Length: 113
Length: 115
Image (tube, rainbow over all chains, first blue to last red; front, side, top):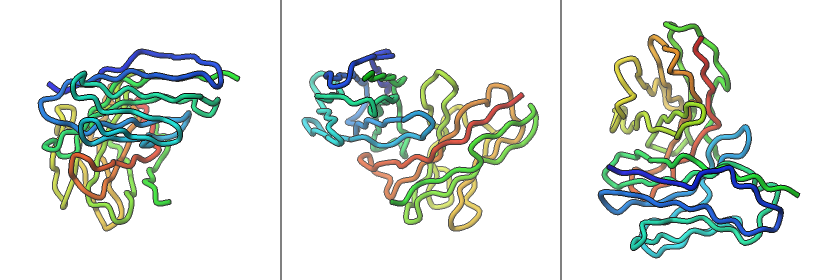
């Protein structure tokens, strides 16, 4: 079946530290890949996406590259801020799935001043 | 910026009661979805809806669940007879298209508590 595996949290970092959240997937086809972020008390917001192998998604200083050879879509940010504290979800979407986004378990990130 | 809205933000109900969760998708979107997140667990797909029909549903979406687009703006999820295990955060989402690369935009969620 199709699934997404994320590193467990919480991940606790100091401000300006480098952040990596690992995400790997298994899929029967060629999915699009997404990172969503959930700030405290809010809904899911799209952070970035990539629709084919070697695509790089980027937004707000975050980046992730679709690596088909390692079935990964790791999220990175070079210098985190306190405002980046949130839960980050990796997700995949297959073209024949009628919009069925499949999410990883989410990784909580806590950035301290 | 257009956004998906959901009402109510919180709902408390007794087991066996019917609940209707409401969503207003982004106005020019054609594809609509419901997801849920039980506390501490993954966000799970429930159902997708297009052209006034269910396109796909998960095994969670049994006969107790139904969806409807009663007018041009609302999209509702009805749970006929709630169970304790239906307690979760329910998210509505919408997208302009239905392809693999389409972005789904999520609402803030309705937290449902079944007592």
